[in-house]
Length: 212
Image (cartoon, rainbow, N blue to C red; front, side):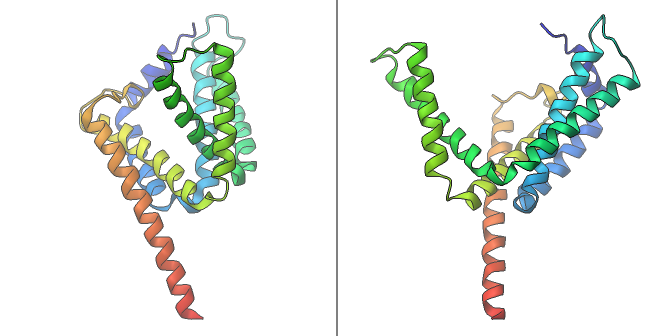
């Protein structure tokens, strides 16, 4: 098992600064994320990959490199991962649609399973079919999915940041998702962000029609 104590320790040390950044970045994602979805997804994935690499390598007892070299390697790998994801972000709505289909399929399986047990191979096939159906059915709903994805990502950041600022947790990485306060923050931020983006786009569309 990988020891992530170094990463957790760093998160606790800079918890306040990181929380303020998460709240501000989360609000921007919630309100204007549709216009920056490619950057949001690319930076998010790149950041997660870079932080994970840094946490893993910095805690290895026999790591071939250390200190600034680990940080540099983590940044480079994170940038590469972010650039790859950024390149394919125009298709992100298909991925999100597939994940929605997968989620619905897995929820249906949990209801049906007690009455009609299936093997792991069958579950995997059903899950794959659900993913493909979701991607297929929702591929024409790119705008709505973009609103939901950006608002959802922003809401997670807001929740993680406020959890520390409100004294609910000591680190953004140690958020209690079962807390009613955190779940309320997550729902309200995601719903408000989605509504605002839809309202703003509709308003802009109406203004352009009036100009003509």
